[in-house]
Length: 151
Ligand code: SF4
Image (tube, rainbow, N blue to C red; front, side, top):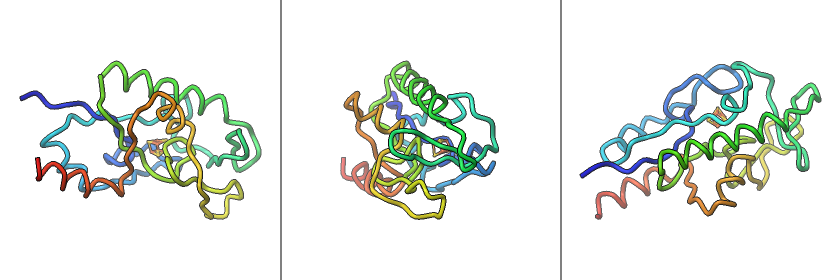
């Protein structure tokens, strides 16, 4: 049986694409590979931002860099391109890294660059939700693996 495609934040797969030039590798993603083809997406890189890059956070409806420059255009472009990759690959759902201004689907940093998180949705997660795409986070991977066992 051919495997279904799912989109996943590239940093969770070990790609060094975060703003600090590091990954956020989540070893349990390996177990998902038995059932799914994992299609990596990093909206911030897709949107044209370099790695490493100055940290950005959502402030009202914009994304601002820590030094105050407006990065909103890059984040919008990244969301558009990530969605295009999702669709081109006929993905069936997405696993997006929580708390990122692009990928966060429940939490984001509060815009004060102090590490504080608040309820909120990143630019790419919002675009995906508007398309009716189911989004999981890295915290849901155990549950997805458990569901697979019960199938
Ligand atoms: S934009 Fe998403 S995939 Fe890229 S580094 Fe940030 S959380 Fe990871």
